[in-house]
Image (cartoon, rainbow, N blue to C red; front, top):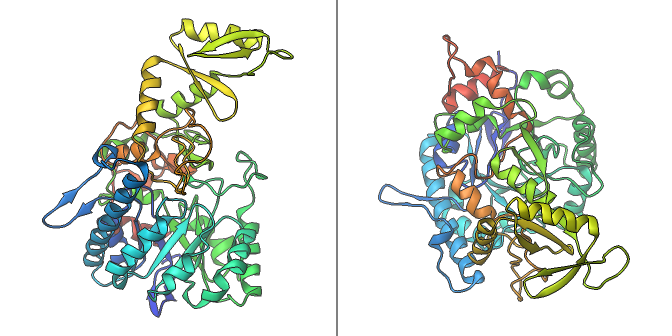
Length: 470
């Protein structure tokens, strides 16, 4: 017997199961179309994917954007993303066999989100149900999506965030509000909706937060608008008593982000899929290395450990000799002053090969190898302007074309690494976003064949298992 029944969304009866839209090319037309074919909402990542038609496959890394300025490259990237998403929507619609719905997922903090949305919806809006959007406060989401008679699904992590969006913008577009996605900021994969007042290591109570969100929505006359529970959702049986059978929360839907990574239709590499089988509890770490400035959740690997090392090889400096800053230190042609203890550490790091000092925006110096310094400078120079503001390269989508701060070597080029890992690049030397529950692949009997070997299901097999609470 199914754990959940179909509900009516947009005039159609569908299962309240949503595929999470993940990163660069981690969900595409094949995977999302297969999910929709089962009767749920498949979600295509509209974040810098690949152009795919019967005649053409076009995959673009940072080397493939040749504009003379960051802004020109940012425009090229946005245009490529529009074309890529349209082709993926067409694939998904065909694979869905007319069942379920297709959404796209965009990040509000991309450099050209609005331009990309207009471009995609002009060309393929008629094939979509709606647009899911998070990573910031997407005030204009309702305005844009409603123009195309579609539904918008804002992602929030608290009732407070939704109230802000409602009062400033969404109240005028309430007929186009499809659902509100509550994403648990402590266990989700990728970027997290944590505020400066919340401890990333002390999980809040999701149930009480969702109840508060429902109460807020009900007070605004949104009793019939579903809440999509996202982040850490693995087995619906675990939600049956306190959530599914809780009248205070209805109507409810559930989003699965991590589990659909491990399906036959999933576009991630075989190496990435196999790594998921090896994860243990605690292997997914919360960190703040992202150039967005947001907290994020990713698998601990050599890539993260290298960033941790750079963060640790860091000393404060003064431009004048004062207080404890008594020791002279020359960096290129500039003279700085360090504390005696920090200078001792610097000399130790230099003996270990970390001989290149690099300034950060926080009046500190980090130390890396000459090879790493060269790589950082190259990646900063090749910036394609993927974000609205990037602390790694100091790019910003504004008239000045920069954040006003110096580039931060403690971060990384997020487009380069996410594009690489999603196209077969090293799983050790790239960022591997993951939800906190990713370790459960190694423990869940659903992912084992009778002989004990690892099993990768089809989307259909996974969908049916989820319905049954497996």
